Amino acid sequence: MAKYVNLTTVSTPDHVRERTILDATAELLLRIGYNKLTMGDVADAVSLHRGLVYLVFKSKDELVEAVVHDELSRYADAWREHLEADPRAGDVASVYRAMMGALKTLPLAAAIVARAEDVFGKYLRKRGSVFERLPEISGSGDFLRAMREAGAVHRDVDVRAVAYILDALTPAIRRAFQEPASGDVPSSAAVLAVLEEMIECAVPPAEGADLAAGKAILLNLLTGARSAFNEAR
Image (tube, rainbow, N blue to C red):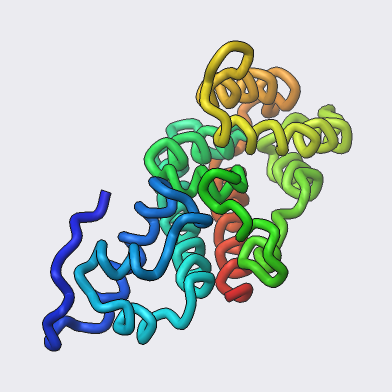
């Protein structure tokens, strides 16, 4: 987690002060949650007077929104890094492999994806919250059709049926990142591993599939999603 520095010196650059406030807030959200978080907690974490924190962020909600956008940017970067490093990048399952790899290292991003109640509490239900304004990622249909046209998915696959099933499973995948593994609740890693096997059986690539074309589609999808998130600021 973040290592905090004393920011009381006048010479501290504004971007360093903002970066440290964001990192401190991210850690506090994970540790105590939105409902208990105060601007005083943030000020104490970065050794600043509360008034100086308010000079950077006018309210707790403005600060939380900035943290969410910042974490989504990190998530997008990590998602791209995992996709670039995947030797099989370009098949449909590589979407989920990249997601799993990124979220393993970004617990706050996992909480955002899951809309975790213990982290974001009543902020999730606030009118005009960042969650309300973030664009919804479109369903799987258009993506799967583009992958089929690119030759990354076998032409005999019923794209509409597969998209319907994958979209129906999305809420359960999100919950897997929110609920700890126990009893009948599997770990998120187990859920995604089984999902990958299901995808590879249901959506096989054509023989000699053009994975490079599929990878380009995935990267374009990520770029488009990131642009939409930035426009929602």
